[in-house]
Amino acid sequence: MTDADRLADALRPHGGEVRTAGPADAVDGVPATVVARPVTTDGVAAVLREATAQGLVTVARGGATALDWGAPPERVDLLLDTTGLDRLVEHGAGDLVVVAEAGLPVAELLGHVAGAAQELVVDLPPDRLAGGSTVGGALSTGASGPRRLQRGALRDLVLGATVVLADGTVATAGGTVVKNVAGYDLAKLLTGAYGTLGVVVRAAFRLHPVRPDRAFGVAAGPAADVAARARSVVASQLAPAAVEIDRPAGSDVAEVAVLLEGAGAAVGRRAAEAAGLLDGRVQDEPPAWWGALPGGPGTLAKATATLTGVADLLAAARAAEQRHGAGVALRGTAAGVLHALVTGTPGATAGAVGRLRGAAPSPREGTVTVLRASREVRAALDVWGPVGGLDLMRAVKRQLDPGRNLAPGRFVGGI
Image 1 (cartoon, rainbow, N blue to C red):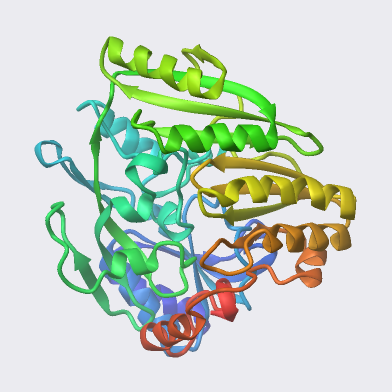
Image 2: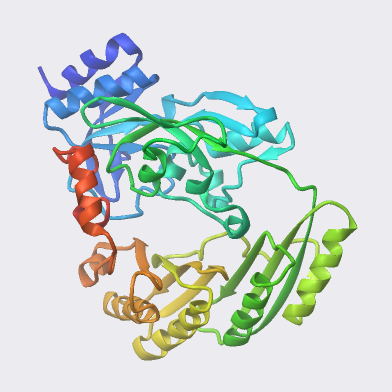
């Protein structure tokens, strides 16, 4: 009996399917052998229990919009397709809470809660949202967008989760109400871990009422000036929902856009004040680049910095271009979470990433993590860079997945 046959036998009582992997069933270039698509939590547990008993490596896949982020897994014996877990379990509109299975596309969740004038403030990049990014995939990659400035990233909005561990154990942490903060915060622990600690099968999130009116303050100028103006808005009493900066590759000029949300004429007044601080203008629509990652071929990295360190990061991008001959586009929140698209040879890219890391000399001051890169670029640099707490992360991995059966090598330190 083959591995696939044993997996199919384990899944059969719970529904779903097991099939031989095809050419499209790969994770960052690493081909899978078998694909399982369970439709229940018990099915996920049965498949993982059998896979681990066989010593198989399992990697979970949702909408496949970010499978080339992180590092390639060491191998993929079993690709666990979560799209069969696609139910919206509960929408407690009165409590501003939604519970959804991991395979539900985020766009569908947003569409459902919009009917109650509510939203999950996740702000996925438009291409991931349109591509079918799922609830589980968004959690696995630690998604966040422009409005994290005021309402936090997705990890701040997750209230609880049901998770299946490598040995098939089903664990539940957190709850479905905002006041529930007791217990081991497994949901936040798994957010951004690239599926290396467990497979999320269900999650509960805090929602927000939709704010009906919005306006933008927009300005452009030398990158250092833009960073200073953006910082003044973040520190102001205007309560901006988002303050975003865009610096195209090769440019000495950057653009800043401030989002003000609320109801009525007060939004326009606040936008006018923001535009005054920016020495810019007010407009009803966001700039074309708003909310999107820097696009095109190249190496995609996530850069973090302190509020005052954003200017240093912008300066480092220009210095990297002049020193290494690479292109470095930067875009993200002025509070210090940006994405960089680096173009050039592997050597030039490695040099540019090193220059960006030099703008934040310690993990407490900022980090630069490579999300997507060619194998040649990965060979030329450390994709994770300096990471604080790595020993603790490894200890958690040993506790939750002692056999390294879940996506080994996908996360920092080979976790």
